[in-house]
Picture 1 (tube, one colour):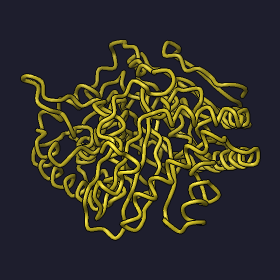
Picture 2 (cartoon, one colour):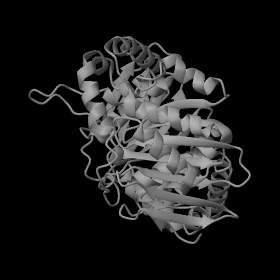
Picture 3 (cartoon, one colour):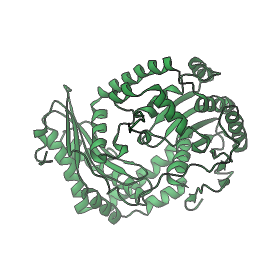
Picture 4 (spheres, one colour):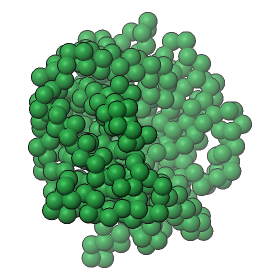
Length: 457
């Protein structure tokens, strides 16, 4: 395939590729359900995902007589496994365990995905169970209260991980009042406050045919999957007879997320840990930005591996950290670029200064031709290796359909990567350092440690 292939929402049938390399096909049912498959020659398993374009950013707050739905998305991720009119929670677990399959779900800021990986012979069972879960969850009050306790335990576990805490606080700081800044899993206060009725309303509002995207990769026959999905959804109380256009994709901003109004420049959470976890962040790129290949190269050079600048400078040369890295997170209308290091308490000020000074050095001096070639090789190789897994291919289909509106295969991805120049990377680094800096730190530290980095704090 040459170039990206657009995925218009008004085209009912679409086919990409050939039988030798694998075929990507998409069907849009009259009800608005979208079904995408990627057949992988020689595969004996398949991964299937049911995607709903509702994430933590889509939860309504308390306005007037409307109860708060904060935490509803994470609640539903749990509750859809708790039973339907025809299956108990144990039945759902047994269905996959008895065939050696895997099943789980993931909640993000912009979508929720329920997925399973099974042998090719067991794919019809996975479709049957996942369709039942997504369309017919009972969300019984007793199960709801039980799961409230489970989610609170999950949040408590995350609260014991200083890296998780720093990450959540940093997103809140960089994204400010944007709904993307809220924790994906909700806060303990939100989980304690949200009602079963509010979660039920969130479910009914967002789990509908025109909101659903089904993706599968591996040993999958497209026509057979379309028939199975149509049949199993038809056994629910969903209205599949009324024609409906698929849900429009989120409006994508152009360029960096400069519209953000950041929160506090410095957040310190005092905890009796052995290390200080330090995260530094700035506004990044939106998911559809044309410079996302450049961001991949920049991140690889800067903090994406053992040969990266952060690893070499902070760990190898100075011995100030064991774990040090950077990464970029992108959404439809905002993005974040983050740097992390775990260090001995008392060194957090020095480490944060080094994180920022390395990024500024990259913006001032750019990268070398050798660094560019190394990053392009790393990214091309890791992309090819990742696509050996049907999970990755299934997820690629979901992101392509829900967020990007185009399908990009490995060859096109590598081509774009190889077109990135040293000047492109330096220009992006200059854009990043022009943004507002936010720092979140967790450990036995105080704000004074960052006086040289964030003087106003």
